[in-house]
Image 1 (cartoon, rainbow, N blue to C red):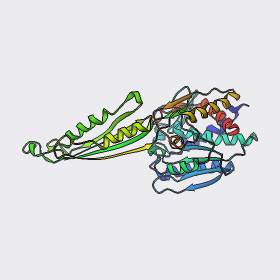
Image 2: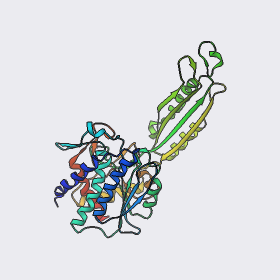
Image 3: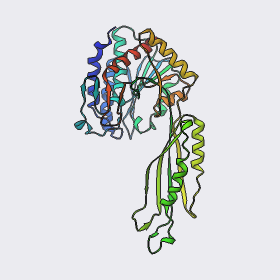
Image 4: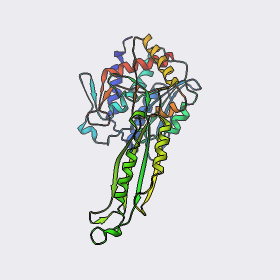
Amino acid sequence: MDFAVYKPAMMSLLKKMVETESPTYDKAAVNRLGAMVAREASKLGAAIEIVPKNDVGDQIIARWGSGPGGIFLIGHIDTVFPVGTLEGMPFYEKDDKTYGPGVLDMKAGVAVMLQSISVLQETGKMPKRPITMFFNTDEEMGSYLSRDIVKELAIDTALALVFEPSENLDGSLHTWRKGTGKFHIRVQGRAAHSGGAHRKGLNAIEELSHQIVKVQQLTNYEKGTTINIGSIQGGRAINIVPAFAEADGDIRIMRIDEYQRVETAINNLQPVLKDAVITIECILNRPPMPFDALMEETFDKAATIAAAEGMHIIAGGSGSASDANFVADMGIPVLDGMGAVGEGFHSETEYILTSSMIERMRLTTALLRDW
């Protein structure tokens, strides 16, 4: 079967989606793209459910059939690029690359999801088992408003496929991902004039500096644990002993026990300077997705199905997290990185290898048909 004949339709849909800008924090913009995606799914015979949200775009669920044992496809339609980015970063194709804001992360993946259903219907190979698609609208801000929907829809499914981009040019699927957490440290000191009353002050920035050194030392490369202080603020002027200072940090872990170690250490930080007060918040956003026995079994089955169609797939992983982390934590078979292959996501150089969309469509249709 020549899947290349479906390229024009898929690229036309991708162009429309990329040119409908959809930054996470612009509800109206995301809803415009959501309406487009809902129409496309409806044309393919899906039953559409809209889950209203107040602060972000409304979530979209598309269903073909119902009941347990189905296949669950997950994508997100929000991006990190503000409205107006398209003017200096237009959608265009050159050689085997396609550029544009959000083209890689992850509008190409959404196009693959929808086009795969179209192919199965046109060829008379649509599976009898239920298929559910979820189009997330707050993934780029951590899926705080959508994770419960992801978990609910994942229950009783035979397989979940997540159409985040492959972060490796070899096209490897993500069979493991790090878990993510974040923390906030705030220090309360005491203000004073830096010249006339320096001794009476309590420098919150100095105290925070001691704590930053302690926290950064929690990194353990051998166990895949990294701590990154990404933002610090404090003080008002150089002639005032600063009364406050705060820092925000990122946690990445391969194992849940490592998060527990880091969380305990951060929560137990003690002031170095007398009378300094430290306030701490530390949360786990997404649990780790390990390459465990279930993941190995899932990948091996997918590899067998792919091989029967003349495709060779590779297992890989990522230090970033996605909605696949929630599904894996439930003990549901999941494969991630099903979207396009490319580089530069979240940057002005973001692009996909155009041919990878055709290969991902081939793989998706085979998995939906034969799982």
